[in-house]
Image (cartoon, rainbow, N blue to C red):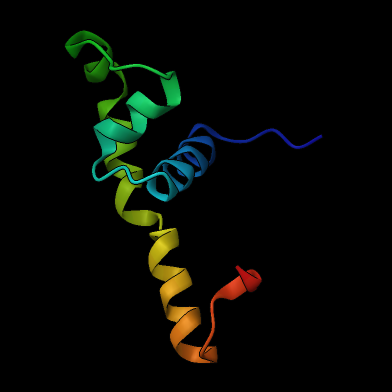
Amino acid sequence: MTTLSQDELVQRIIYVAKMMGSKDPRAAADYSKGRRLTDDEWLEYQAIYERNWPLVANPNSIDQQVQRMVGKKPYGF
């Protein structure tokens, strides 16, 4: 079993949150907790989410790039 670093875990959360339409790091953190974080909670997570946000490609953008390259939607749907 592989153990993920905090950054790797947050990057996976951000990827899924972006797939679900999150537009900023705080929305991704909210998504990970299943509710809106309090300001104090956000301060606890802010650095790691803001550091990793730009490192994660937007999955919707990737699908659009693939669609342009092959002329159809990826995955057949």
